[in-house]
Length: 321
Ligand code: TXA
Ligand code: MG
Image (cartoon, rainbow, N blue to C red):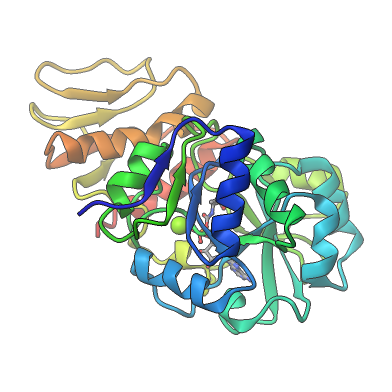
């Protein structure tokens, strides 16, 4: 039986009720501007353990703690460098996760045993309202990975969350419907534990934006195995993803609108710019699977904006499951 109670009309009462539920140890899937997250009380080890079982994710992978307000980072982190404060002031609420030295509140079951913690204030009215309701009743933060099964494509709608996780959620768990995610790819993850910011996962907040705000040179990205999104075969649909190939009849095609659709090819998305590309990408990959398409050709967008994040995810999706 598919579970997870769907809340499509998120009134103030409904959000207050959802906050009570998460406080009581239930899971609550929340919309954010990047992708939907599967949330649990970040101070409750049993609730956080359920995130791992519902996702089918290895237990030593750290989780991002979502906060209502920038001030709340003081509870979760220590020795916060000035450049991290500058980033938080400039880009929160927004599609950016800061990796900071953890406080005593950030237990091993959140950090995967690391001495750092990932923190984010999401830019979504409903998510912020929910986080504030949780805070009012003593909540410290909501641990939330993307609300997909391990290795799959992140969900950008509440319906996609239900399709991904409905079979694994309980009847008391909730899915809050906040509409389609407006960014569409996961947050930029920035390691702030060194002398300069280092990008662990590219997103809508770009190197240029980070350097402009901090006045520091962003360190080169290294492969960091503890970032589970860095495992090669991630973000993958069932369909085989082929980058920059020529689609044959029966194939799916995702490309900027300027690329024509050859005869017999199933056009899955034709975004007009890179932002729209990011917004439509995961939905289009899901659509390929829904239609039973075996092979999807994706023409990668150029550019050093969010196109970097798009190419990063596509490179992984192309590795397959
Ligand atoms: O946009 C997002 O970041 C979404 C929404 C829901 O906020 N969340 C998300 O979470 O993408 P998740 O768990 O699917 O990916 C977060 C990545 C993981 O690869 C995790 O390993 C990494 O962040 N991460 C979390 N805490 C970390 C830490 N302390 N050090 C290094 N990497 C960390
Ligand atoms: Mg994820």
